[in-house]
Length: 217
Image (cartoon, rainbow, N blue to C red; front, top):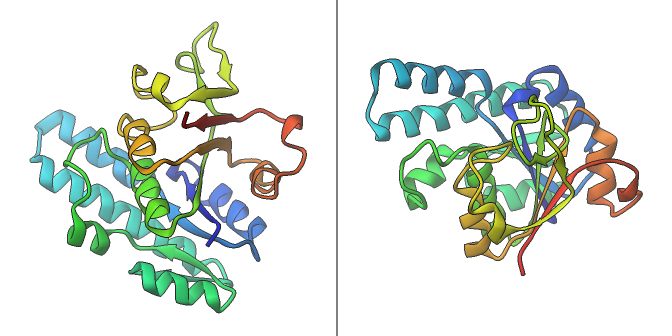
């Protein structure tokens, strides 16, 4: 597979389904964010403080739930539980949608923390597949500060090492460290516009819209 496409939970359901349909026939794998389910777990954790192990596990369960729901609405995808299964599905010209819980329990690649979300998990899956990584979210990319605040500016391109000093933005806090560890570049783009995702994947007309490219040195 050439690409791992992380479809942000913020796009679910309608925008996520529209984006996935637009990518039919592409050589890629989908990782789905946990969306509102994961946000509720984070909210409850702030109120009561559950163990890190259980919040980590249930947030990943949220990803699995949305992956299954998304797959239910698509005719050209198939759920995958392992990397080998994902490759077999891709060989059948279908797009695998990754259920991440089993592979993460087996390998435990991260410390259990809210610093790790589906962004980092998608980077881990991309490293196992030796694939390119694109994160589709509900904003145009990474900003100098919260994009809802006055004066926020989009960052078109940034060295991954500079991101190590950022607070959580449209990507999670662990992602820059993992991109360095895995030697990955990453695109962050607004998935509400599927044509932008396709343009990046096909390396066409990338100067006609905003996005962020994170590169290793």
